[in-house]
Image 1 (cartoon, rainbow, N blue to C red):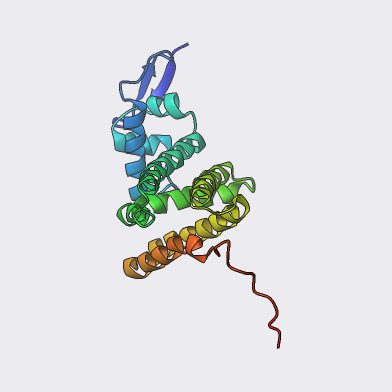
Image 2 (cartoon, helix red, strand yellow; image 1 turned 90 degrees about the vertical axis):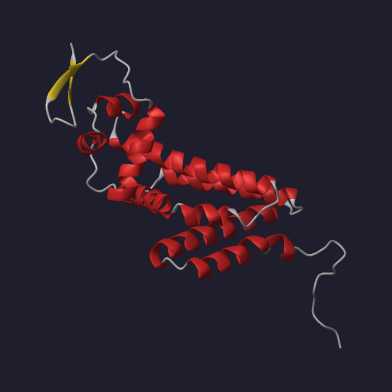
Length: 210
């Protein structure tokens, strides 16, 4: 039985074969979706409104993503991939400060990322998307701190503190637009953990004896 989809550009029904591969690639389509959502938000977004804006039928969206929930998951995964790849490149070069530059240059993507994750939290307590995002970032920074000489236990704590601080600064940046203050705070935040680590020869502080 042929599949009938709505052409977003014309508003008319079109008959499409269920085995036909869309001419638009998944990556091209995902970029178009990200551009739309960054501008319009996710609240009223539907496959039909997305298709109309992209000038295509809804078929490619259904073909590649299945549902709006799966599509939003793909958007988060793509935004996080871009941010994490940039951060990993910087960290490999020993540069702890430049990852914040990505946040400054991609504030609309950050806003979209938070919007999707907060909507997921409203719908479900489990939050698989948010769980995966935080887990991936936690792993990245734990390994960075272990390489810098922290014990794994201390690295776990420092990574948790760092991620919590960075998320707060990202929200601050989105809400206030204060680039200078949030940038200075980020630089202080990421440069402190290893500097706070006591050297092995340093004695533990105890009660002072008279």
